[in-house]
Length: 391
Image: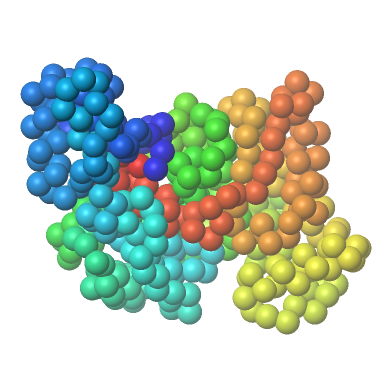
C-alpha cells in the first residue's frame, strides 16, 4: 500500500464524515499498527470522532485489532491495522492481447487468476465475453467485492465510457454503466497505460513524484504521473502517444491514419521486423520477444537494426514529452521488456540525443517493476483509492 498516491476523486461532494473516515483509514494503512491516540495526532480529528470511526470500521471488518502497544503509564493502547481480506477487488487487464482477470485483496495480493487470452473481444460479443469473465471472478471472490477495476486500451471518459478503442472496435460504448447496472457494484475503468503508471507509482518503489510510464505491447501508450497524480488531460486522452504520426508515408494504422508510432514500435510490428532475420517459432508475443532477445544478445545484426529503428522512432515522441514535462524518470513496461538491455540502452541513448544536456544528465530510464501484473494492480489501486481513499 502506498499512502502518498494522490488519485483524483470523483467530482461529487463527500460529506465531512466520509472525508474523516478516509483520513482515519489512510493513517491506519500508512502507520499500522497504530493506536487511536496516534490517529488523532496524525489526522487532527477529535478523540471522540476517531473512536467512533474506528468502531464503525471494525464493525465493517475493514479494521482489526493487532494487540496492544507499550504503556505510557496507564492502560496499554489498542493497536489497529487494515484487514486486507475484508473485501475483494475484481480486476481485468485487456491489454497486450491479454484477457486476464484477477481477484485481489485490499493490499493487492492475488487471490485468484483467470486467463482468457484466446478470447477475442471485438464488438458486442467481446463485451459479453468480458462479462462472462467478471461473472467467474465474482463467483470465486472469497470476500464481498469492493468494486470492479478494468484497464483497457483506448480513450476512456471519466464516467467509464469507452470513447475510442479501435483495437476492439469499441466506439462510444458506455461500458462503465453497463457493468455497474449488471453487477450493482462500483465500476472504475482506466486506460491500460494509465493503470500501469498507477501500479508503478504505487507499488514499484520508484520514489519519484513524477513518472512517465510507457507501455509497449499490442499498442504503445503512456501514463503520466505529475506531483503524485495521474494526469488525464482535458479529454481523458493524455498519453495516447501510439497514434502520434512519426512517418506520414508509413504503414496504415487501424486508427485510420498512416505512420503512427504503433505501426513501427508496437510489439507485433517489432516481431514482423525480427522475422525478416530470424525464424520466430511462436505466435505468442512473449515467446517471440524472448527469441528476439536471444538473437540480440548474440549480436544478430538484423535484429539489432530493427531495435535501433524502433528506439529511434519511439525516442522522437518521448524526447518531446520528457522535455515538455521536465520528467526525469521514464519507466518502460509491457511485453517489450523481454528484449532487455539491448532495447533499453538504445532507447535511452536516443532520448538523450533529443533533449537538452542538462535534462539528459538527469534522465533515468528503467524497466517496470510490476511486470505483467501492472494493469491489474493499477486498476485495483484505482478502485481502493476511489472507494476507500487508500491504496
